[in-house]
Image (cartoon, rainbow, N blue to C red):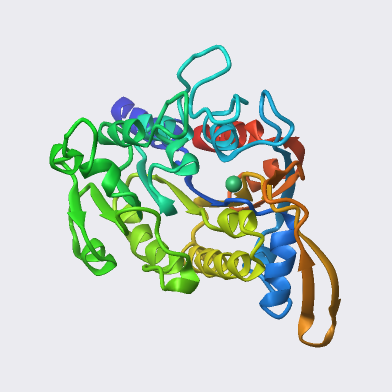
Length: 349
Ligand SMILES: [Zn+2]
């Protein structure tokens, strides 16, 4: 009798103790150099629609770095990845010269699987901010070395040469023996390894209009099943790197084609996570590039004439779009470092 009562009592109170909070998956998509003008021009180019309209929560981030009103991608990437404003050109190191820990590394400590996709080299400033700590973003070979022992499980991006044609003569692809290196998205898809590296090019990947493969949407489509096929939660960074490069060249067609490549990838992510209550999708930029403005146009076919005001970056605030669990905390105006803090909250709640 006593035994039965105890058993019943345990059954009754069990949910109070065993109700584990499900860990949230985080997908962060960064359009490098993507501010409101790039989104607006991209939207009109797509006949007045963009995947970003599916996001219920929008905020604005202040992008200045610790030493400049106009940030570069290294300081902005560090702010978003590690939560501290640092000097332009610096990756993952604070103004007090301390090594910072990124949200990707913190997620790994919590048992997450991790992935990075970039349309630049994998050692370029924005992706590198999530796994490297270097004083200068130009230390590409040092950044490559730091990827060897990083917490990145799967990566797709350019820059093979920084791993195999090095001043120190090391062959990092050989040293990364726990990775399965593949040379096509099909092989990436077929690989059953827990760690996969896919160098899409030796140097910078081509612009999408010059035939870059894979398309960002295809890379995302093949990456997401890898990350989500175990019981572990996951963190994925996707960078549409070349919106920025089009801005620096003041080439609107370059900007728009890269935006559309990213827009398709966002649609793919939203489709994949449609019935998934456990994944937050965040889309933002690191800064605006080109000081782009739409200065005239016609409503018919949404034709537009654009003008750039600089070949560099601008200080414009950058929108942050969020959808999924805890997305409401991304509304408002805040520093780019708060994007890290908000993802950190998601990681722990
Ligand atoms: Zn730039």
